[in-house]
Image 1 (tube, rainbow, N blue to C red):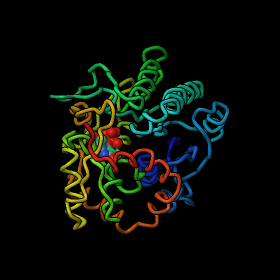
Image 2: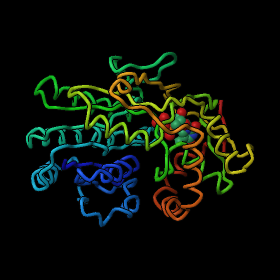
Image 3: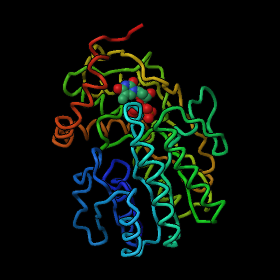
Image 4: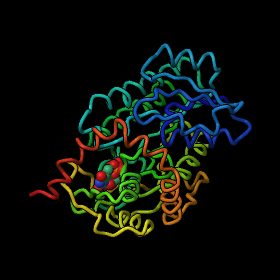
Amino acid sequence: MRILVTGGAGFIGSHLVRRLLADPRHQVVNLDALRYSGNLENLADVAGHPRYTFVHGDICDAATVEQVLKEQGIEAVVNAAAETHVDRSILDPHSFAKTDVVGTAVLLEASRKAKVERYLQVSTDEVYGSVETGMSTEEDPLIPRSPYAASKAGGDLLVRSYWTTYRFPVLITRGSNTYGPHQYPEKFIPLCVTNAIDDQPLPIYGDGRYRRDWLSVHDHCSAIEHVLLNGRPGTVYNVGGGNERENIAVAEMILEQLGKPTSLIRFVEDRPGHDRRYAVDCSRLRALGWAPTVPFEEGLRATVDWYRTHEGWWRKIKSGEFRAYYERMYGKRLREGVTG
Ligand code: TYD
């Protein structure tokens, strides 16, 4: 299959590109705008691969998208291009609406016109909103609570509408919190790991008892590939790792693995509208023949080791644009500690 992966230079996208290339039946085209978190270094090992092509461009740009679909003879599309960080969405909601809603609309319509055979939208469990008890099923209402989650929900609903309206063969995956190598250090796990390596404080929002279901990027990508190849058109599939943990417990595991003291933990002012918990029921995807394979302790250890042995990768990021972002997000918080 000739597959277009958008956002292929990002965290999940780059793992997915590499995974798809491992199957000799696939040709992979990566369309990426290379904004702050898109990084071609993530794919340095496959840059010259005979079945891989990189195109620099934005999913919001219809002419570019149409040209790529046509010239590359694309048969399947995986939309992994997105603005993904909740905290940034609180600082700048507009860019989230643009990429996650308008970008999805452009890519979806171009894919329909090009008669693409399968279109998979990489969505998120955050579209369900905070789940205090129980597990979200694919039929639950979407009650997103951050500009990020609302933008992803907008894209997700547009994609579903293309099945009911046009019978365009779409698929949607709603993955839980993903972790692994090459994740931009604004996210909780790589932020904690890289701060701890440098003996810097680990900022823990609120009481630290917020819960997330951690999914290895390898399991997330195996789920996306499995749904792309085997999913029923018009269907949504939840993807979760089955590793629900409190944030504070994750931070303590990281410190323990790095041999750093728990005194680095710093409780700071909470994120506004912070969702207490996400949890997804994955029985639909399990019935399709997928299961996660990476236990959290093992996956986290491998991730910590990766950051420990790839300092060049994240130090370059942390010394660039990230510094201004970090000061804006955490400067006051860390100086003041928990307020109120
Ligand atoms: P994050 O990686 O931003 O993912 P999401 O908000 O999409 O779940 O955050 C994971 C959890 O960690 C979430 O409950 C917020 C919390 N968190 C902190 O406590 N401190 C931080 O500095 C960050 C980035 C996140």
